[in-house]
Length: 218
Image (tube, rainbow, N blue to C red; front, side, top):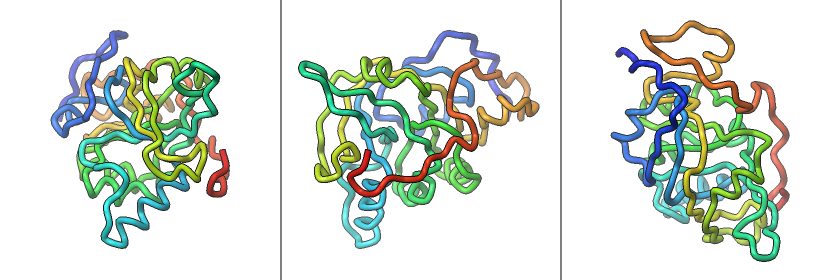
């Protein structure tokens, strides 16, 4: 499969939900502006969702064609929709991601790279991983126009939220064909003709992991 020509600096505007067809048209290194509904979940919420699936029950929201943003927003200031909402290191969710992909989850948003197993599962199930810009939590929060806790309020910042976003900026880090922005950043040769190099953005360095918090911790 050949890559399209280099995309330049103009981002693609993409409306949620994220269909299989739309995901298949994305390429590692592509800048995207997401609009529509995405859901938040981090370690503790993922653990509970997997427990529900293993018990034959449904998760708090339908997974098919949805996107999960790995974030634990800070409390909102008076009059604000949400507090700072920067991305969490994605590898912390790797242990929980594959069962969600198997049930139709189409995309995830975080920082840093994904494990080889998750990358292969994304290829198999036609899903993508978006990297949000690290160190820009307040800026990202401005692109969130609605926020509502829909599950696990006892988890505090890790509660599952339904967000309505408008032109939320991300970069395609892993595409459905196996493209990997972090390989490109390390200088690996493009995997197909015409593959574009990623923009110079802080997407979370490999090895930038921190230990997962206990349930309810920020």
